[in-house]
Image (cartoon, rainbow, N blue to C red):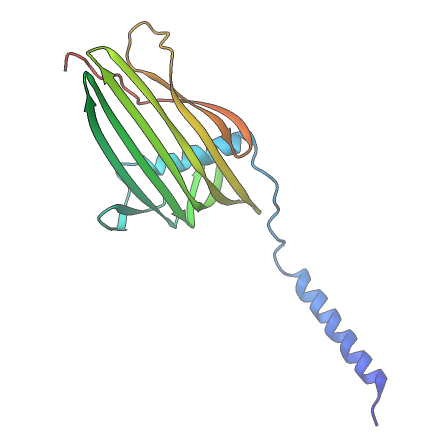
Length: 201
């Protein structure tokens, strides 16, 4: 005979089992945004990989190279360089694109896993007019998906690179600034390693 009580008992047991099983799974990642300091740490960590001359190369093609990230994952880098001269002005335009995939890295005591959405593009234009007039401009744009300590989200990047006034009085090195929006925060970053070309060289 069909017994409704048996069916009800089976369904109740299954529901309780499912509830116990769900209680043992890891909590889903939250969407709490990165702080301003964490955003800068993420940005500096990704740029450090791009600028690492000792990075481990694990693949590539004619127009790109794939390098290993410090703690796992990888990033694909592409770069084009255009050198042109018009009258007394020499201009060098460098465009690079970084597409991370499961790239694990750490900065400022925070560990991140980063994927491109789909990539971050950096463009730098340096110009030398005559012997002494040096100009610098460019941009960093794109977006990254990130995970860190149970949190996850996306970081949109829209920064403008410009030459800052030289207050040292020496004329070298040239101070450069990246300013704009980083992961939803208004950001201003001073860059090192931008050197004014020596007109006597």
